[in-house]
Each structure stands twice: as C-alpha cells, then as structure tokens.
Length: 258
Ligand SMILES: [Zn+2]
Image (cartoon, rainbow, N blue to C red; front, side):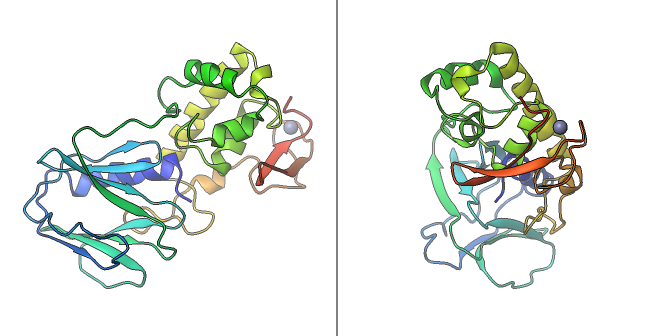
C-alpha cells in the first residue's frame, strides 16, 4: 500500500516529466473511473501531495485527484506498451502516464477550485504540536493506532508507524493521552527523519511498490523492526516481537521501547 514516501516519490518524479506539458489525449479503460475524457489540450501544472493523495493540477483551475488505495500505481512509458490491469491513460508528447491497478480500488476525481487539505497533521509539517492537540481527544488510543488514523495524521501506514516508534523508543501500546510533550517531540522528529530518508530511497518495496519508472524503492534495506519478529534489536540486542494492534501486525523491541 503506497504511504506518504511512495506518493511523494511519485509526485517528485511526475514533476520531472509532466509539469508544464500539454495533455494530448486522455483515455479511460475502466468504466468504474468514468467521466474523465475531456482533458485533451489542457496543460499540466506541478503535481503535489496532500496526505496519501496525489494532485495533478491543470491550467484551468481544475485538479485531477488520484488516490492509489490498495494496489494502484502510476507508470511513465516513453513508448506505449499495453499492460494488464491498466485503467487510465494520459498521453503527452514525450510519453504517457498509465494507472495500473489490479484490485481497482484507486479513485480519480476532477476537483474545481482549491484542493482541500487533509484533516490529519502532515508529518513533514507541524507534526508534534498538532498531534498533541488531537491526541487529547483520543486519550486511550494506542499511539501506534493513532499514527495510522488518517484523521489524526495524514500519510503514515503500518510499516512507517512501526519504524517511527522504534526510532523514538516508544512502546506502540502506550495510550496517546499518557505521552508527554517531549515524547511527542521525539515521535515528530523520528517521523520527519524516517519519512525523509524513505523519500530519498524512493519508498519501500516489500511487495509490489514500484516508482514512476517501474523501479523498486530501497528503504526495505533500512527497516529496523518491521518484519523482524524473533530477531535481535539492533539497538539493545533484545528480542523484536510482533503483536496485533487494531488488527495490524505491529513490530517492536520489548526491551528498549518504553
Ligand atoms: Zn531494543
């Protein structure tokens, strides 16, 4: 599932290839998306991210808003090659953009006017203070579940939530209402460091994530706890354990995450 670093990676790569370019043709291959054909002749402005959402602004104050959901990905093709599970095509002079989505959960909408900001705090923005405020409303929620709640925090998924709490040395079961200001500062700083590095690595390719050019990311080589159940903690040598928290596999060191 694409999280903040993967969507940000796509955004940055899209700016390299489509910003300022004219759309020659748009084609919807999956009727479930519907109603987005009339884009030919529009010029694409610089794409940007809101939470896990990808925004492709046009020169007429409209914005194409894409959410990749479970299995959606965007692929840039210099030479057109028809691939299975293609749902939507946008053709430019130098190549075309293809939405590939085997499970068909991705959504594409055309927004007129300003794009609304997500409800949750952006971990690369004003993270600790906003989270402190929102956590007061959810005092008993485990901090890991809080980080995954998109209404509280925008863009973090299961892998990065585990890694952020490990980096901050905080137990994922701690209730948000019990965390102190300095602990939120640690979480905020860990989130910024980990997500920034993951963007530089073009995301985490554990299953099917690929970037705009079809290449896997590199952050899977940097993971400290995710997927390491039963192995030794790199920091203290204690055991990495896995438990289910709000239905999601949660990895942490039972010795040094307090
Ligand atoms: Zn440890």
